[in-house]
Image 1 (cartoon, one colour):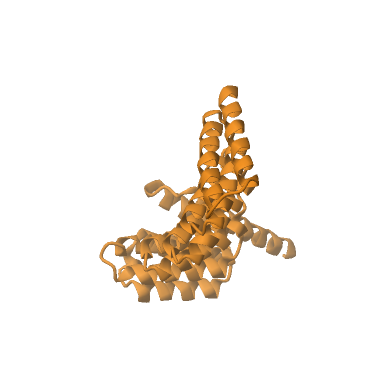
Image 2: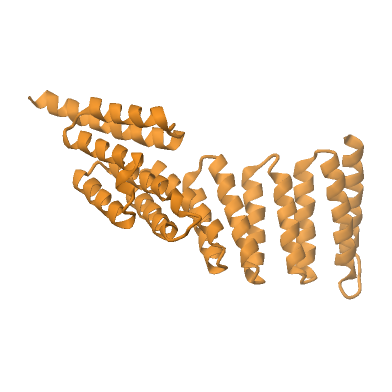
Length: 289
């Protein structure tokens, strides 16, 4: 491993020497790029990810001098892939550089792809606000390129993260928009009941009984078959439990649904929040009597 790092250092020194010297018609930058790429390969073989990322960044700068913008963006992506092994922040910064260049040269699909990747990096770090920022950018770019499936995947995550951050109106609106988009699509309409369940859970978390009942009416109008589903029954039972401030009824409704269809961790977390809020309300009112 140390041999590969030594070789990489040597290639990097040669590249720096080329850049410090004279060259005709940008040839010194072309030579430097070749040497930086060789250095990066050696550093990767030696698992020296920090140095690999650094020389890919230098290669990208040389490509910009040569006005080879697509190659520069690709070099920043290569830098990010190296930095991912050791530094989330450096990886995100390099991908951001790539996104800016892809935007500049009109490669919006590529820009969208890497915005989504940055969002996923921040998701792994549990920095959901930054994840939302980049996923929103990605969704807009995918939408502008009519890559609807990818745009909707981003929107689904945005809605989930917004709910986790207790931004329930935003989450509800996004889930409902996804449901409206899917209802007239033969391939997507079967997923609508799951999307409406997510939207309804966000309404339950808001804790406004009127808003919940209005939402259930909206969902039946949007999808007339929804009222016959187990998802609708769960939401209706939860709404009734909230009307009656009955924690036990709330819990039983969740148990009944979960015994047939396992609730995922996202739904479980939100429903537990709503249950705890209902329990606190019940206890507060008990104290007053």
